[in-house]
Length: 304
Image (tube, rainbow, N blue to C red; front, top):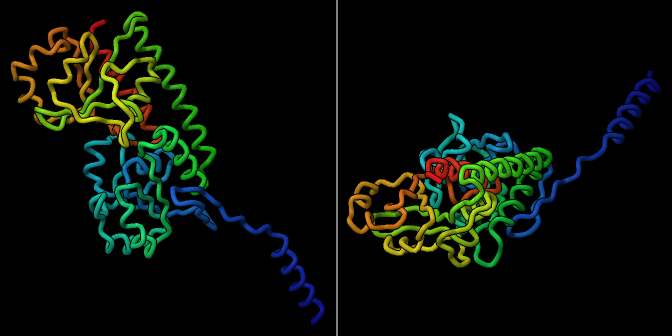
């Protein structure tokens, strides 16, 4: 009996020893290497670009900052119902975060000052993707792959990027066909009020989408952190014979469009103005596809 029990113990021990230990997953965020013993399951996103990417990877976050704002301004991909709103992006509720008991919190530059406090609650991944001293497009693609690696979804991420590139090729051909091979220069703006507009230029996801569609920017702008420059509405006349697209929502639209100066803008007189449905211009790697889809839909409303 003794030897039988000893044999059982020996067999169990050998079985346990034969099970390979799970190697820690190491990913690089904007601080360096972060390690995870197992893929996080309960994830909170305080940044909308990361929220997009989680959903695209098939991960529903348990908490997101400003869910109403996400649904109004980002729209795609749709935020699943039941996700807890954890407060403002720049000032989330720490008490609510503690109550959610996440095993990963993901932040961007807007939450950098909260990093030490957040790490008392859960491990943190920090992606500082929007900067003037690097390519924002390259940064969001790299961080998307790092996020996927941390979550054990690398293969899904690569498939998503391949699907994105294929879709961009399709959209480019649609735009080219619509304009019979002679596509206009296009400027994309987001109005803040009736006097000023954010004009998207170098280092923006918008210009990346324009490039993917084979389009030139009608209002080129220098490299900036967010890829945008604030301009007076009167400066938009420089679009000339090009097309001006403005991203919705724009609450002051009626006020601006009724002004005499607006009526004399070349793109208004030439009927080369169109609205772009709400889409996020500061998103992640797959936001370029959403932008390109929205821009294409708007351009198809413009007569060649």
